[in-house]
Length: 222
Length: 234
Image (cartoon, rainbow over all chains, first blue to last red; front, side, top):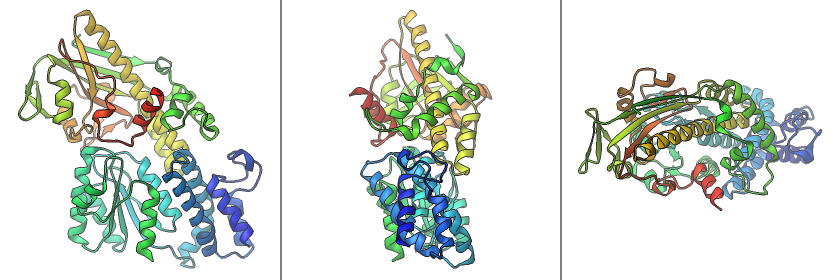
């Protein structure tokens, strides 16, 4: 059983999506995360085990390698796609409640800003960390964040900004969320954002990379 | 020299796979097999789908206020903030410009992302940004050539949203130019549609200068473009 979980983890870490995907070349013509996850379930491996012992550790390795600049965004995106191909087989178990996620995470790029690559990377890594991600997209104002919070009051919130000037909108959104949901936890990130700025605007956590956000959420959930 | 309109062919931009790989962060000798064929495929596709336009309009009615660090163009005051003001303040006139790569590349990027083909979506996005930046480079080079004939020079280009200049000032900038200039529309939150578009200002005059390395002025220390420029330098 461990062997198939190890294989799934390896496929996710190195971005082997399915049998037909040519990347990585040393895994050509081998089953990918898609086929292996399906087979694991057929062989009786519990979906929780696939999530906890294959997908989450594999994505953590990817996140750590990215933090150490050992891989670039493309490898991370391939890993996320491989993770998704496995996750598709787990979806029915999430929906039935048989497999539980660690919690909900609402994310969006703040109003006035449409840069979404960083936001997407964080969303993928957090999903790979076992969380349900509610992605509000780009150019998202306080009202939309609050509406999502009304629907998912226990969710943790992530705000992204790439422009120095839209960081101001980040502040407005943090203030609006904290006014209505004072106990909420808000993470902020994006190229111009710093730990000092995070503290100044009353957000709870800043991470310069996606894995930092995953680790913080892990702490909150434990 | 008051106005100029450009329609560029994709081939004019001379973009190639290795330039895009550098923007993605890859350094000399590093394995990039994962992206090379996809970049080539998207560059080939971009020849068909890009609709690359640029325009600029020159304004001679320009005032600078040292105290508020604002620039007034045709009676519209821009709070451009310290960095941009310092670069523009010796200008005799300014060019307001817009440039776009067209709708399609942004649409394909979003579609690929929605379909969870993240790498493809990302590469469309990067290629779209490179198209529009390369096109503005061509437009700016042509402006520079025109200015040289009259003994004038130009500054670098500056856009709302960067160097502390509030992105909301796009609304003022768009008031200075005819509606649907270059086919670009502005959303209420000051974002441009098509997504792969740039707008901004260039100072013109005998006493202005072009700064070949502007990344040092910017707050974004960990930006892909800064890294790419650093890599090209070494």
